[in-house]
Structure formats: C-alpha cells, structure tokens
Length: 465
Image (cartoon, rainbow, N blue to C red; front, side):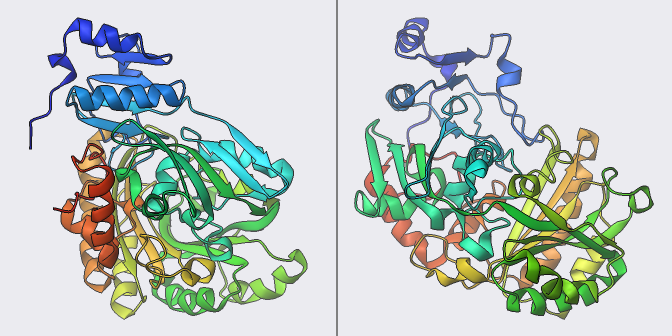
C-alpha cells in the first residue's frame, strides 16, 4: 500500500487552490483556533491533524474527499466527535468536520425527520418533541447523529422501536470517488444495507431520513441498590426485563454516585442501578413497576418527564473533555460467573464517573433478522459496555487498567463480539467478530465502493481481496 502523504508535504499553492473551492472554514496547525478545533469528547485522545475543514455544505464535503484522494492523505470524518476511540480524528492528515451541516426538518404527513450529518441528538429531540415525536437514539444528548446511527444506535427506546438503524429510511452520501448518491430500500440497496451498522466505511453521510414515533412524555429515572446486592438484583433483573412489555426499558449498571443532583447520603458510594424508561399508558405503570419496588431499592427517582429530559439526564455528569477508556461485549446470559464478576469489579470502581452498563436488546430490536442489517447480534440479550472515566489525565492508567481487567473477567462468558460504537481502536479481529457472518458481505460492498480503503479511520472493514 502506498505510503500516505501528510498535509505538511503539500505545497502552499496546492493548499491555496483547495481553499478557493471551500465555503467553510479551513483550520491549519498554525491557526490560533487549531487546538480548540481538534478537541473531541474523549480527552484521552490527543491527535494532531494536519488540516481540519469545517464543511459548510455538501459541495465542501465532495471537494474535501477529492482533495484527500488526489493528494493521498489520511482522512478522518468527524460528526459529533463522541467516538470513544477518537476515530473522528487522525494524525497529520485531513479531518472532514461535518459539525456545520445542521438542520432538522419534521414532516408530520408521514412522521419522518430529515437530519443533517453534523447534528447532535439533543438538537433532533428539541425539534421533534413539540410534534410529540422521537427517533430512537442513545442516552446522552451530545452524541452525534452520524456516528451513533452508522454503528447501530442503542438507547432508551430500543425495546419499543428498535435500534436507530431500524428507523433509518434514507441517507445522502459522498463516496470515496467524490460522487454523491442517495441510498434507501429502492436506490443503491447494497449501500443502504451496509450503512445500517457498518459504520463510516462506505462514505460520508451528509443527510439522514428517519422514521419518528409517537413519544412525548415518558416515566423514567434510576433505582439503586447497594453494590453488595449486585448478584441478586442482576439475577432478578434478567428474568424481569426479558419478560416485561416493550414499553418498559431499563439498563442495569454498576456505578458510583458522584454527587449532585443525587442526595448527599448517596455520594461516593457504589451501587447496582437500573435506569428505567417507560413509554406506555401511565395508568398501568405502577402495577407493572410494583415488582421493582418489591426489591426494596435504597433510592428511587422515577417519574413522568418529557422525553428530551431523560435523554439529557447524564449530560451534566459527562460533559465533553473527560478522560475515557471503553471496552465492550455482547452477552446472551447473566449467569453465576458473570454476576460474580460484576460484583467484584463493581465493588472496585476506581473513580466516581467510571461505570458499567448492560443494555437489553429484546423487543423490537430482536425482531429484526441477523442478516437484515450488518448488526449481527440480534439474538444477543445485552450490549455491555465498561467505561473508565475521570477528568484528571493522571488517572488515565488507573481507569484503563480497571476497565481492561473488568472486561477480561467477563469476556469468556460473552458472545464474542462487541457493538462497534462501544469499541476503542482494537484491531481487525475484533471488528470481524463484531460483524460475524455479515463481515464477508460488508467487505464485498467495501471493495465495490471504496477499493482503496480511503475511508479507513473507523472500525475498519477491509476491501475484499
């Protein structure tokens, strides 16, 4: 493979000629705003791109792709910048920044939503909520629409309405050759299949069209039990959540209560917690939830709220700029050994923001076939993620070690692969394990649309030889 050039290898005239083609802002290493422009959500990632282009429109995106390809530059694509592994950045190459490509347009006639490639989910929720609608997404409103969607999209509405990709109807894309295409169930069907879980491997999505659903208010919030009860609560939870109606979602966690808005008596103590979200008839909630209350949580803060409120519940605790280290796996069961590992490592959480989550994948998400999208674990019961989190770079090693140790204790009991949005830069074997039997088809589509692997700064699917 030909060695990539760096931006520093380019002549001034080449760069100035490129500048004439761009309406957006070009940020170079010598510009005063460079260090701010290269920041992403995970402050543990410290990459130095040669150039960042904040695209103003689709034409800018096309010009960037052509410029990167013609000059043999390493190219990264940045949407919301939330990716745990920092795959929206690269060293010395070109970052195509979509953060200015923002708009949300709601069509009430068919309850669809058109969203720009640079939008954040909080902006989508803000626009859809007055219409009594929501698109299934994650659990943090500052997450980018593009990265979350292309990897799958697990969150509070997964059981009721499926993954985010199950609600994607259409996308506009710029391909590796600089051309522009629209993909949906009738146009470019192979690409439409591939982007519903295959990540940013196939092109840059500049616009998404989603099916929205009637969600206005939900009943939600956390219940907490002492960490010592982890095994008991996980065993009960496994039976309860898998048999609960699709309207009731709840992800289970091992966690520390770091401080406000929780009561002071809980601060800096470790808990097994469940964060609930109910979308059904409010009059039926108390009867359904009585079984949870019968488990005697030491804290319950569950009530009615607008859907955007549950989506922003953790924004204040997890702002951009913290140190993050992620590890993840899918799980089919929460057996005795799994529960024991969660108790052990949940009892030794190293910093107040570090935590483990298990997201249930039953309901609507499980009713899609394993080959219908690249997301190959429709039959898994849980998407698990362990995150070491702290504001202080001095604690980076500590949170990383705890995260890896926790993961290594659980991995032998996992389904083998992980949800790609929960992965760091972990190599080819892990990428292939995440797509299982669908990897071969993805590699063939990659070969057809990106034979030179131009889009490689991602959970990379290599073009089929």
